Length: 394
Image (cartoon, rainbow, N blue to C red; front, side):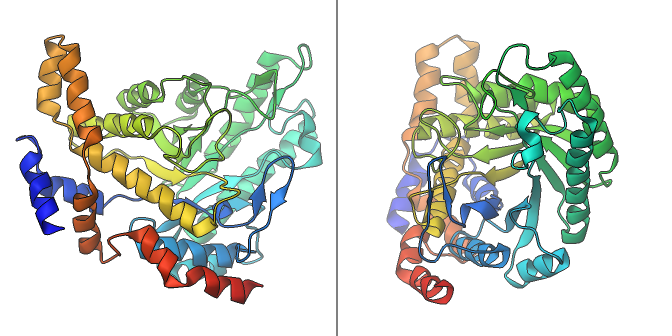
């Protein structure tokens, strides 16, 4: 592989600093979701898998296996009440024992019977009070676990014209979020997600990145927008949104996944890896232009219902690594020159050259430095981990 690496180095543009690229890849940090390790399904059925994690502690064990194989997934996002326990310090301590930390805390504002007409946008102030109370509870969980991020996806919306008043719902939303924002600690953040439809099919209260960003701006500097790759209409130019939010200083986080039609139930990079590369191209360009680290939380959010849980997560992490590696190898100097000259063919050719590059030798070098297997997925499949947990959890 050293020969393949040498050939890769020789083929790189003059402006690419390979030591800088390796350093960036070694520092890459992808947060995995606890709910990606348990049994999951669709509206029609939950498909149970032998060995799937049954509680938050087993989810942490699976996440530790992913980190052991990849070296870049040290944090685990929790979902409340799916991961609810009586002692959250015990969760944080167990995570630390496994070499992990607790990442974003995700409130659940869509499963209670009272939320049929919404949670914090509901016409009934009693329901709104319950929803706000749940988010404040999640901030208390952040305090207990050391989490720095409250990640909010709001399912609120309506299904029929005239069902409720748009502007009154907007004001209820803002009032509730100001209360939640005020409870955040100095080093804590609120990331606001958006989705253009489902489970509401007429309107969604935070339907797009503009609504999420406007709300974040109204709340203050501790609030930013979270981009979920599966929450856009087909054909949406997500990389444009990413670039815009970087320029406004309001890009706070990602939920990585793939979609073919709707939502985010497919593993990252499974459908359109070129789109994933183009998104990372904007992130790499943003870091290069700002000459500083972007303050972004990179998270996976997928319910891989028919794939083995841990293997699917490793697969997604690898796809994210590949996209970032290729984006770091873009000849930015030549790209800017082509753009300034209006040379469309050359500009696209430069991007395609980076995307078409085989970055396997580079990633193997980075993994050697991290002390993890050269081929994480293959190593996991050969490790016997799945057979071990099937036996333990049967």
